[in-house]
Amino acid sequence: MIEDVQIINDKWQKTIFAPTPSLPAYLISFSVMPNSYIQLSRQTSFGVTVRVNAASHVFALRVLNIALISFELLATIMEVPLPLNKINFILVPFYDGGMENWGHVLLSESLASTGDDAHLIYVVAHELAHHWVGGKTTIKSWQYICLQEDLTDFLAFKVVRALLNEDDRYNRFRLAKYVEIQLAEDFLSVGHSLVMPEQITKETEEVDNFQITSHCYLKGVIMLETLESVVGEEYMFSTIKKLVSTQQFLDLSTFLHHFNKIKLDANTTLAEVYRFWFIQGGFPSLLVENKGSSYLIRQTSAVTWPLRLSSTFSKPRFLFAESMALHETKMPFFINLNFTSFMRVNYDLNLWESIFRVTILFQQIKPLLIITTFILILINVEISQLIRIFIDGHNS
Image 1 (cartoon, rainbow, N blue to C red):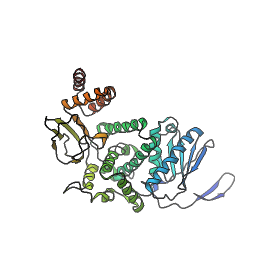
Image 2: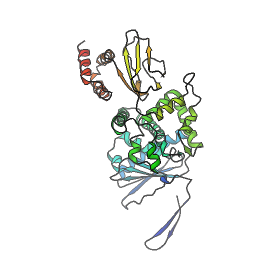
Image 3: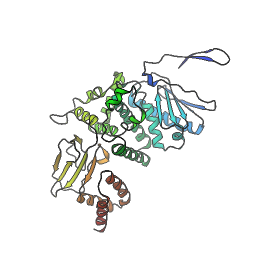
Image 4: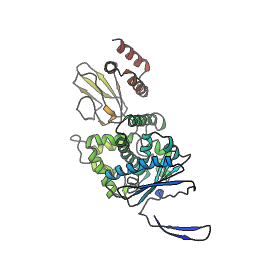
């Protein structure tokens, strides 16, 4: 907020800004824009004015409409007032993505002009959510940057889902995010955990953008959604609100404090499970086999993970062992419905055949075949097996 403007001479003026709340230095920035830029603005019901600065009225209006309703949703969720009276969006040409500083958000002009609705909403909502998670409270160390970014993404996904009513645009957006996760796990940051590598945090004052994007915004968001599937949306929102309203600095222990008393069995708390997920590198893999009178669920990854199970059966909710038998014969049997948990699931040939028979029955074989082919390639199932299953299922 400008407190005073003093004219020095015909070439210079001095602008004095009002003091801000105590902020991390990386949140402070300013922009010098060309005279051709226009500004559109509108005030939210929370008293914060959203301004969009751009070369195009059309692009500015698109961003303003999205930013306004995104802020309303986030402010309603958080219930923690922000100590500012305006947030400026600056559309920048030849720039990718977005960057939040306190009340000052840089946004890709290309995304604003040609980006699909879901990704534009996501980036705008993510940068707005950072005013609470990252602004009001921030990480103690770059070691935990993924916790901050993933919590912000968790909130941004809520906004995308609400604004798009879970339509095809939302489903395509989520599928694209799942593809990003697989690419990171297989190529960009193989075996990584959500803890930033120690040599990076010790040797550098800041972590660069590639290090963040190849570790954060990915499986960590799915893990937070898995937490939500156990405790519920209201509890997750309450936890984030408490952190933002009571903690200036955030780390893993501060976050886990809110899950220490939630028991999953006699010996294990939800906090212990999430800590394992956060610090363990790589990903869990399951193989589901039809044994006639039962199903055998077996972990095939090198490390045994504590896993949240969602399936066509209601129980059990968690798998803590390397393997487990379920005495059921119902077909087909699906694990990880709606991608509730971060894991890769494969099935034996009999189960794949039953899956294809169901899809043929509902005349949905083509889209499922495309998606399943991609998933099977990712989990290293030979494509010849898939073709044989499809042909046998189609002929039977």
